[in-house]
Image (cartoon, rainbow, N blue to C red; front, side, top):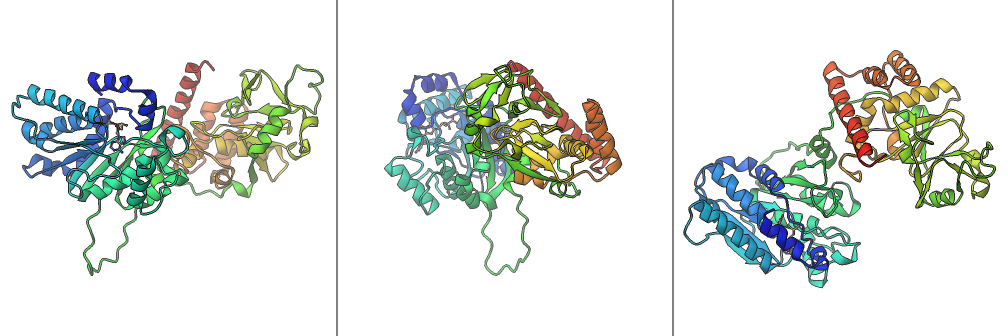
Length: 505
Ligand SMILES: C[S@@+](CC[C@H](N)C(=O)[O-])C[C@H]1O[C@@H](n2cnc3c(N)ncnc32)[C@H](O)[C@@H]1O
C-alpha cells in the first residue's frame, strides 16, 4: 500500500470503510499474490501476445502496480505492461488514486504517452468487468462482507447481483466468496484467479457453495501465518486456474483426482504429509465434549478454592483450555477467565449444578482445542472438571497405565500432525489445530507398543523432549518422516510459548 492509499483509507468515514470493505493490501502481499497468479503464464508474458490483468475492486491500485513491475521484470516494456492493466472500483476517488499511482510509475519508467490502462468505475457484483470473460488474470483483495454484521449486510442491489452470480440466493455467503465465483467467470479458459478471502472460506458452512463452484479450478492455497490486515481477520487466497472445456466425445474416461481444500490448506501451512496406520483411539477410549449450555451452568457454580468449604472433595478443580499444556496442568500457576470473571484457583461447587458431579468423577484425559499442537493432561483421580470446550477422553480400562498410554498417544507429535491435516484451515487461526470429540476418536494410535510404553514412562517422569522423540518413533514412521514431524511440532510448540510470553501469560 502506498502513502496515498494509506492516507485515503484512514481519511474515510469508518462506517463507509466497513460497508465497502476498504482495507488496502500491503505491497509485499500484492507482489506475492501477483507472482502466484503469473506463475503459469510466464511464456505468454515473456512473448508479445496481448495479456490482460484485472483487479475489479482495485482501490488505490496496489495489485496493478505490483503487476506492472512483475510484467516489466519479465521483459515487457513499461508501456506494454501498462496496456495489460484493467482496474475497476465502486469508489471513483479510489480509482483516481490508482490512476495517479500508475501515472507516477509510468513517468518514473520514462513513459510520456497517455496511460493505456483501462480504469472503470463500476460495481463488481452487477456490472460488466473490463475484458469480461477474456481476462488472463484476475488478482486482488475484494471487499469482505460477512452477512451477520449489520455494517456489511448486502443492500438490495448487492443481494440481486450476488444471487445472479451464484444462480441462487447467496444467503450468508461472504461477498468476497461471491466475487471469487464471479472472477472465475471473468477469465478465459486457462486464465488464473488469485483473490484474497477470509480464512473461513476453507471450512465454513456458508462458504460451501463457493467451494463447490471453484473446486475444479483450485490449484493451491496461500495462507499467511500472521494477521495481515487491520480488519483483524485471518485471510487466505485460493489460487485458481480455469479448466479448459473438455471436447465433446473426447473419450477420456480418466478421472482426475482433485486435491481437497483441506489437503491444499495443510500443504500451504507446511504440515508434513504422513500416513498413520494404527487402530483408532476409540478402540481404547470414549471421547466427549460438554455442551454449550453446560458452560453457563458450571460458570455459575465456579468459586475460588480459598472460599468457605471449598477444600472438600466435592469441589472438583475447574480446567479451562488455557490451563492445559502438553502433559502439564497450569491450574494454580495461571489465572483462568470464566464467563468474564478471573479466578486464581477455580473450583466447582457441585451442589449448585443441575447435573450430578458423579457423571464426570472418572479418571480421564482433558484435551484443549484450538491450540498450536495437541495439549492434554491426565486426571488420575477424577477430580478435574472440564470447562467447555475442553474434550474428555475416558479410557475403557480402569488401569492407571491405560491413562498414561492414552496421554502419550495424544502428546506424540504425529497425533498433532494428523489432527492439523484433518481440519487444516478450519480453525480460528491458521496456527491452531481444531479438534472435536468425534474427530479425536478417530486418531490412530502408535503401532510400536514397546516404544509407546517407553515414551509414556518418560512423559510420566517429566521428560517431555525425550518422550516426544520416542513417541514419534512409536508411530512407525520413516526416519525422514520422523524428522519432518518433530521439526514441525517443535516449531509450533516454540511459537506457542513465544506467543504466550508476549501475551504476558
Ligand atoms: C479490501 S479493499 C481492496 C482494495 C485493493 N484491491 C487493495 O487490495 O488494496 C476493497 C475495495 O473494494 C471496493 N469495493 C467495494 N464494493 C465494491 C463493489 N461492489 N464493486 C467494486 N468495488 C467495490 C472498495 O471501494 C475497496 O476499494
